[in-house]
Image 1 (tube, rainbow, N blue to C red):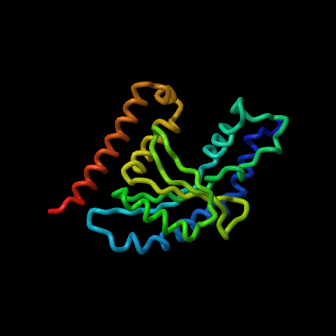
Image 2: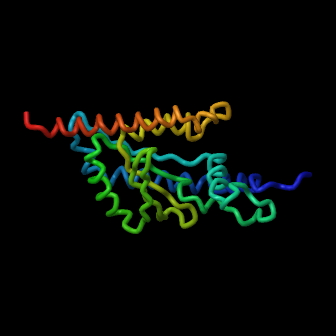
Length: 207
């Protein structure tokens, strides 16, 4: 019988943690939905707020941990017991999407009331921007949770872009490094930002 690999042990750990990961995600979504009711209830007809939980899939979690290894981005077979998926901050998460983006600050203030000790880890760069926090909920002291607050236009684009480019199937791997694709992605995000800025400016303009 072949020796177990690091990946084998991590897969076993993942499925042992899965019920706990699901509890964290469900609790986080319910808490967030309830806390932002004062904002999501009285919306204008054109406004949208959506909160949706997700859990990291097994292979995605292992790949994420592998990428975090210093210098090599590979697992050391001689240190098989030193790796744990609980070191990942985003096994369970909720993404809060809002349109227009002027609602993002209000949502952030409300959620900080119930997650005052969670650690800020914002996303900022050419791939888009989001408010992001992580910490532990009452449902688990082993599996941490994460929530993001992001423009709905950007967040919906991420759902497509991440599966097609950030986490592509093998035959699309080369697209990630393509300058043309990187330029196109940046152009989409700039166009979405411009659309939202113009929309909010015109909405606020007196009739």
